[in-house]
Image 1 (cartoon, rainbow, N blue to C red):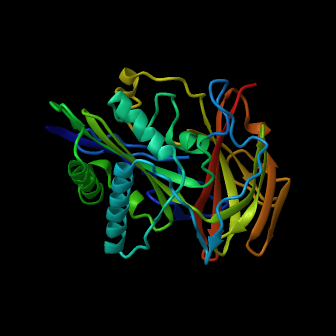
Image 2: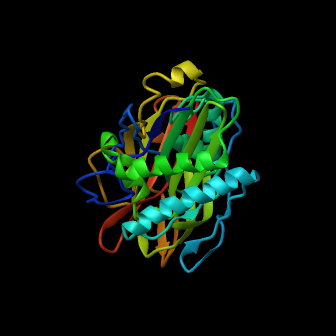
Image 3: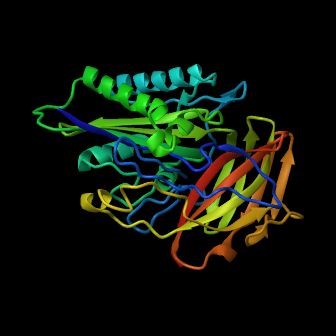
Length: 354
């Protein structure tokens, strides 16, 4: 028996793209909205290391993303379970059918496993939340699993009761269809945040996680903006080195730094209650990193290196002046096209314990 549908999604300005003037304003703060009847809403981005209980990632690491052809990054998601593979393919089809209805290009299936890991975590606990049992928000989790681009998350679940066995494939396909439909066409309670995420023209990829038990079916959608073929992505403490090739004709714009407290483990009971059964934000905006000669109306520092030649770029900076206490520091990378449109190209989080 199906009791009810719930989902979370991403909001804010509802897009990874916007108009912005460097001297006047900044990246908006993303705020989630909780809606109990059918959907919840939220926003997104990552982490390099998390205290001793987590494996460090992306610290002093140079790596390259998958190759790209004709301005499209090619990625492959490996799903061993044939049932999950079928469900993910069906969910991707529905997403792209909805995007086509609104005249948008399809998204490709991404290769980041954060969405699948989160769906498994929620199914195990029989709960719905953007936070995991490890206390990570979506962007921290995405970064922990080596995400290097920009991400926005939708989360949905169907709670079941009175079952002796998990739902069939056909039942789960119907749950996916119901969740997708409500996210796009019945999302007013969530201020249409899920719809904006699914139909965001700046998204290029989506990572889909599904998991299920006798008591719950969970679907996680992590939409990505992949605009960079990374050649260098290195973080050593507060020192950052980034380099690669843009896949579109754009330029680096600025970096915004956000702060969150260090994640702590959460119980099922905690995840089921406030604030964890609500939306999430990027944390507290504490500063910016700019190219020399520009200024903004919050604390900022200049990058020590800011280079671009054609589509290739290389940037270095240190954000230690913003670090006042232990926590997770998230860096949002914004780029700008020739028309002055701002896109969110990457986001990454690093935990710092002084």
